[in-house]
Length: 130
Image (cartoon, rainbow, N blue to C red; front, side, top):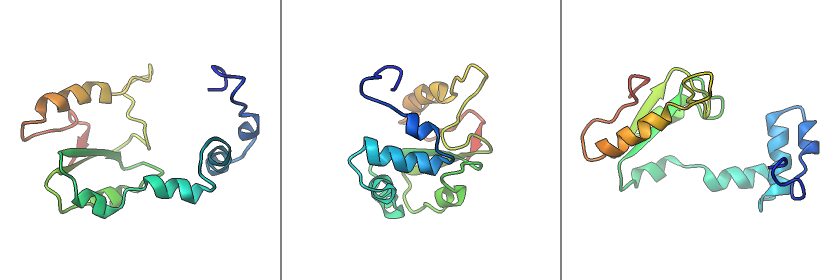
C-alpha cells in the first residue's frame, strides 16, 4: 500500500516495532475504525455456535503448525454435517504454498471444490486429512 499510495500510507513507525502484535496494534489503531486489537478480533472471531448454523457446505482448511489458530480449535467444531475440515501438516496461518514461485495449491483446489460441490467427496488432493 505504501509503495502504491505513498500519499495515503506511511508505515515507517510500524517497520521499527519488534513484534507482529505490536505492528497489529499500531495498524489497527491507525488504519481501521477499531479502537483496540480486542475490538478488531471480536468482530471477526467465529464462535463454535456459528458453525452449528451453517446452511451451505463449508470446508475449513487449516494446518497443524498454524501459529494463530490452534488446530485443536478446528477439530473441536462438530455437530453440523455441512461442515468439513481438512488439516494439513504444514502451511502456517495462510501459507498454502506449493513451490518457490509462491504459488498456492488452493488455486488448484478451488475449481475442484466448485465442480464437486454437488458430490459427496471433497478433499485437498492428498495434502490434508479430515
